[in-house]
Amino acid sequence: MSTSAAVGRRSPGPLSGSSPRGRGGIAAWSPGRLARVVTMLFVATLFVFPIVGFIAMAFRSNDHVQAGSDGFLGLAGVSLENLRYNWSEVNAFGPDGGLFTQWLGNSLTVSVGGAAIALAAALPAGYAMARLRFRARRTMLLITLVTMVMPNTVLVIPLFLEVNAVGAIGRLWPVVVIMGFFPFGVYLSYIHYLTAMPGELVEAARMDGLGELSIFLRIAVPISKQAAVLVTFFAFVANWTNFFLPLALLSSDQSKKTVSTGLQDLIGSSPLFNPTVAAGLNVKLYMPQLALATFISMLPLLAIFLGAQKYLIRGEAIGAVKG
Image 1 (cartoon, one colour):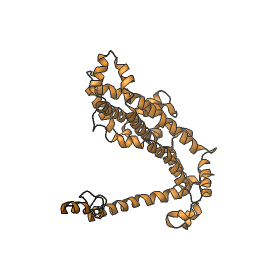
Image 2 (cartoon, one colour; image 1 turned 90 degrees about the vertical axis):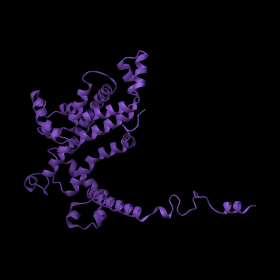
Image 3 (cartoon, one colour; image 1 turned 135 degrees about the horizontal axis):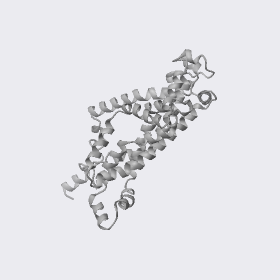
Image 4 (cartoon, one colour; image 1 turned 90 degrees about the horizontal axis):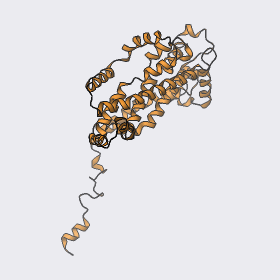
C-alpha cells in the first residue's frame, strides 16, 4: 500500500461531515451570526410577551386584574371558569343579549360575501387585461392602479350618499356589494396570468378554435388556484377589518353592526373608559371581557391565515418566474 493511499484513507475529505468547519459546525456560529440570532430572539420576545399577556387577560377575573395578584403576565390567574364567565358577560351585552354574536355573524356575511364577489370579478378582469388585446386595456390597468392607492376614507361619503339614495342604509347587502370592489385582487390576477400563463398557450388554444370564454374557463381557471386563494385571503382580511364603511352604513341599527364597529360600542360602554354611560347598563364589561371579545374577533383572521399560509408563501414568487 502506498503512502499516499494510506494518507488518503486516514484523512477525511474537505467535504466530510467530521470537519469542525463543515456545514453546521462550530465555525458556522461566528460572532456576527450569534449576534443576529440573539437580536432576533430579543425582538421576538418583545412581541410575544404582550400577546401572551393579552390572551391570558381573557382567562382572568377582573378582581385579580385590579389587584394585580396573578403573577408574571397574569398566568397564575388563568382558568376556564374565568373564561366561561367572561364570555357570558360579553354575550349578555345588548338590550336582549347576544349582540356580540350577531356582530360576528354580520362580519362573516359581509366578509365572505364581499370576498366571493371580489374573486368572481378579479379573475376574469385580470385575465382580460393580461391576455386580451383591446384599445382601453392600458387605461383600465391605470385606473386599477389608481384605485388601489386611493384611501378608503375618501369614498365613504360618496358611497353613503348613493346607498342613502336607494334607501338601503342599515342593510347588509349594500356593504357586501361594495366590499366586492377589490382592485388589488384584479391587479394580483393580472400579474398571475401575465406570468404563469404563457402567451403561446393562449395562441395555440385560439388556433384550435376555442373562443375567449372557453379559453378562460378551460385553461385559465384551472391554473388560477394560487391566485384565487390569494385574492380570497386579502379580500376577506380587508373586509373583516374595514371600519369606516360599516360605521357609515350600518350605525343606524345596532344589531346590523360588524365586529370592527361593535368593539367600539363595547369599549365606549365600559366603566373603564366611559363611567357615565356604563352607569345605566345592566352588563358592565371590564378588561378581561374586552380582551376576550377582541381575541374572538381575531380568530377568523387567524384561521384563514393558517389555511392560506402555503399559498401566501408561494405567492411571494408571483411575477418572479414565468412559465
